[in-house]
Length: 116
Image (cartoon, rainbow, N blue to C red; front, side):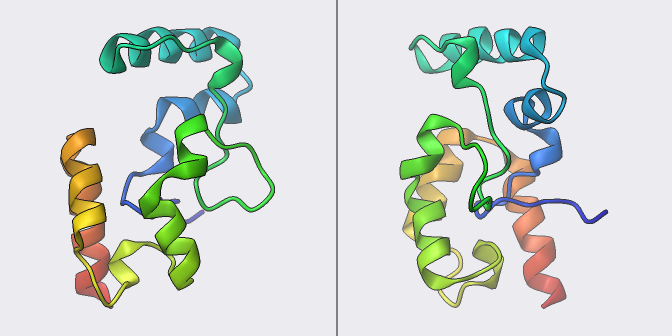
């Protein structure tokens, strides 16, 4: 099975919300809710932690993903992920990756871009 890479380059297999959803594991959802609650200084409920990957058309999405500017841009441009975009790497993507501070996302996109 190919690795699912989100529009911004995150590997879904490494996302705790995605993993908890795919395993239908409420204990893992609770851990994610607590961890992200501390990280983002907000409260998440177990039922908030559901995601089938940001490229899903009919599946579950984590709350923020429904309004993520990078995701919406990728859908609008009909690209597999940002590495496939002619405007890579744009301010929208750079801003999100800075907030997320996940270097593996940028690394994933760079590898994909080089292979195109």
